[in-house]
Length: 219
Image (cartoon, rainbow, N blue to C red; front, side, top):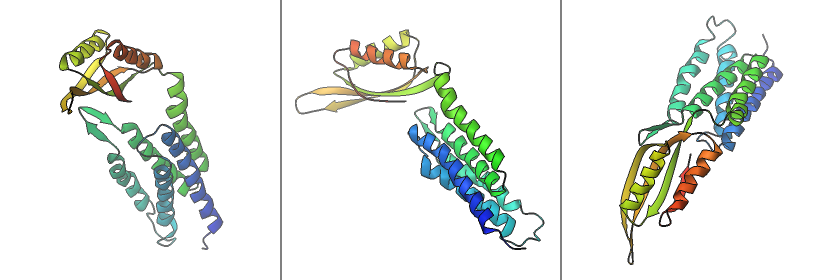
């Protein structure tokens, strides 16, 4: 039985295209794994699937064994994107995205283009469209870095945001000594409801304290 190279190219091309589509969305969201990581995962999964079907002879009775290893093996790559820092877990969505991208690559490798396309559209719908339509639902973690002249200013700010219903997950204070001054460098992680209004409200709280200077805000 002769290998159809055009069919193989189409399978790999679909995997690259669909995996890259998810990767572009992740790149836009400035996530740990972006376009290159996702298209490589999808392309590699598709190739593994093709190799399992045609690389060991057409009489192989169990051609799914190689593809099955992709399902478990992608977990190691996903685990590398998960970060546990200061009692906060980050990267779970990115890890899940890599996992489903591998599944899309396997679907392309077996020629199930419609299933792979529908899954890709659903992933993009869940990651981007629903995120835009329901931004107020759920909670998010914000990390603030700012400087203050003394610890009293930091405690006053923490007391203010706690009074407004925001949860302080962790904080770290460091004394900084300069030739002509001394100040406190604070890193605080907050859990708050999603939404631009809540983010703006938090910035307004910082502006109420004239001696507190915001240096970074990540979420």
